[in-house]
Image (cartoon, rainbow, N blue to C red):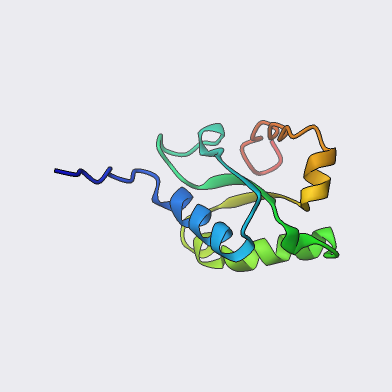
Length: 112
């Protein structure tokens, strides 16, 4: 009998599927950074994504971010509070350190 694993991170899976389908990335990392914020344990509200795709060739950085935001518009309207985007071309990725920098600590909002 085959058991299907219970998916306890549906938002992350939705993000992964959509980014994969839209950008056919050569590299994709999705970091759930919700634990760094004042949210209940197990939340899926704050994410950082690293998307490396040839579809970003000849596309300015701001437009790359807009493309990712468009693909994830439903997630951003339905639970994702913050999305940090790193969008690179394959050549940029190859020339990089291939390390995604850690996000800064949450200041708790309201300029604290």
